[in-house]
Amino acid sequence: MSVTETAAQVASKDERPAAPLATDTFRHSRPAIVGPDAPEPPFPIVLSGTVQRGFGRGGKDLGCPTANLPDESILPMSSVTRTGVYFGYAQISPEKDSKALLQEQDCQVLPMVMSLGWNPFYKNERMTAEIHIMHEFASDFYGHEMKAIVLGYIRAELDYVSREALIEDIETDKRVALKSLARPGYEKFRADPLFDGGHSRL
Image (cartoon, rainbow, N blue to C red; front, side):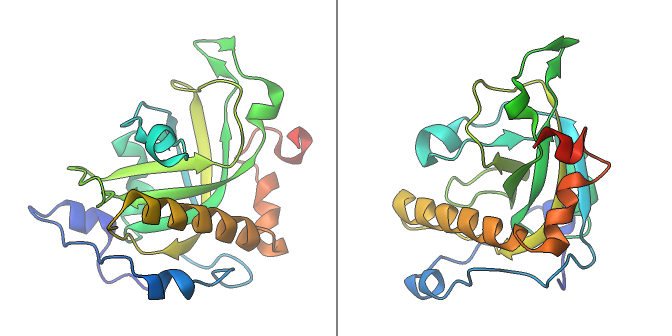
């Protein structure tokens, strides 16, 4: 993945460039699988931090609840990648305040898609890293620790003329992520030592 200007470099400027508008041509020409057969530099990228409350619109507006990482925890990624949508694996810790609160099935190593940027449709004022874990959680996990391995790039950050068009692309992002992760070169990261238990939780 060639990067002319990293997300962190863009964030340091007074003004950020406008995101291109998503088009029907782009939507209909999207590949089902992205990236080479195994991650290539700068991937894999490891992220971790305490899950914070975001804008609360991922689940409400888009049917895609997201977990936000603290600003400082995204520097390992924003310093080497551009804004856009990415895929990989994530895991939520069961404990919060030394109490085990999540069920075991919610603490597996799970596929995820991640948006790094400003969400142009909502005109965010600061860059965020929002991770959607593809799993139906029994309860929220604010305040829990999250570990993630980012393995590849799906597409650029785009603006949209409607919420429905944004939702359509998000659903495509999920399908692309799952198909891309199904290859052996990516699937093996599910058992990475970063995660607690790896395959033992699956």
